[in-house]
Length: 112
Image (cartoon, rainbow, N blue to C red; front, side, top):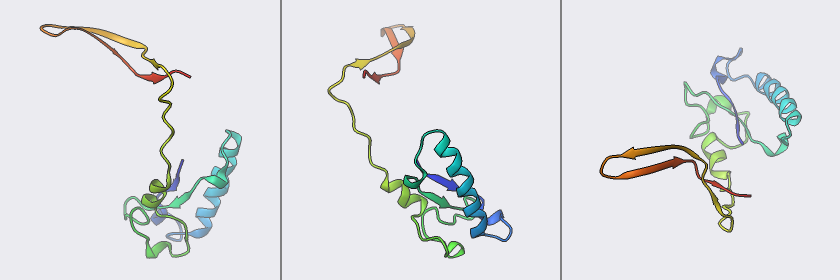
């Protein structure tokens, strides 16, 4: 999980470190309540409109020393795929397509 604090260009004053820290404190409290460890989640201040801290470091956020959004995305490890588990395919619909036949449609899930 990555938490981005967007619209940092719209804070008063612009790119306010105090507002960023206030948001982190409030969101961290909520994340703890729902079972996450906020210490393991990167909080990235960004401005989607201006492009600040999304791909490259922004001079507007020079007080922030953590990863950019792109760097934080690159740090996420791929989940282990349970290839030793059987496939579970709950059917959602069945289509009868002329010239093809009957096509069952569902969403593949690994069975735990």
